[in-house]
Image (cartoon, rainbow, N blue to C red):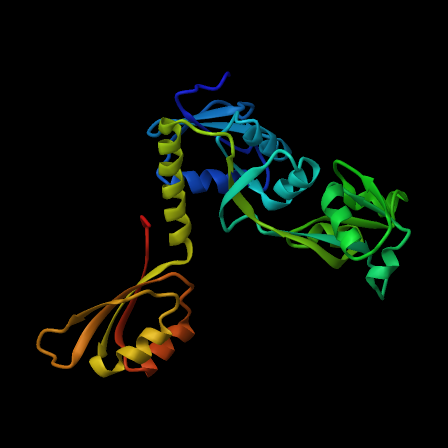
Length: 297
C-alpha cells in the first residue's frame, strides 16, 4: 500500500518485543486501529489521521530518515546502531517511552570464573550490533575481531564461531539457557519515539504535534498518581516535601475545621506504602491515592 500523503505515518515493529507495547501506547492515546490479517504490513486509525507501517525493527530508522514515515517507535539500541553506521542520516529522538528496557552486554561462557575487559584483547566477539560494540571496544582501547551475526548470537561460543558474544539482555534467561553469563555492559536501551528531520508542511506538523502531545500524556500517567489528603495547616511544609514529584499542590481550607486543609497533588513518581506512612507521620490523614487515566501536559 502506498502511503497516503494526507495522513501521518508511524513506523512500529511488526512483531516482537516492542510491537504489543507500541500498540498499547497508541490505545492509551485514544487511537483506534483497523488492521488486516497477521501478515498485514499496515494499519489505519479510524479516529485520527494516522497510518501505521508494520516493519522490521532495524528498518524503522530508514523509513523515518527517508521521510516515508514522519514518526517511528524503535529501541535506542537499533537507533544508535543505525546512527553510527549512517552518521549523515540523522533522526531526532523526541521521547523516551518507558518500555522495552534492555541492556546490550558482553557475555562469556559461564565456566569463566574471572573476567577483566583486557581479556577481550585479540578475541572474536559475535554480535548483531557491530557499530555499538566497536565503539565500546575503541573507547576502552581494546582490539578484537567482531563477527557480525543476524540472529542466534548466543550459539556462537558453542559452535566455535567466537569465544564471547555481545547481545541484548532483558531477563538473562536466554544466556542462562546457553551456558553464558554477562560480564560487561555496553549500552542501556529502551523504546523511544523518533521523528524525521525532513521538513513537514503545516498540516503534517499539526498532526504530529497532536499525536506527540497525546503520547506525552500517556507517558506522564504511567507512574503518576493523584493524592488527596487532609492535614493541619502548620504541617504543609513537611507534607509538601514528602509528596513524590509533586508540583505546587492545591490547598483548600476544610469547612468546620479551622487550621486544617485538604491537599490535592499530582505525584509524578511512584507512591509507595512507605510514602503514605511518612505522610501520616507528618500529620496527614484520610490519604487517598488514585490512578490517573488521562493527562494533558
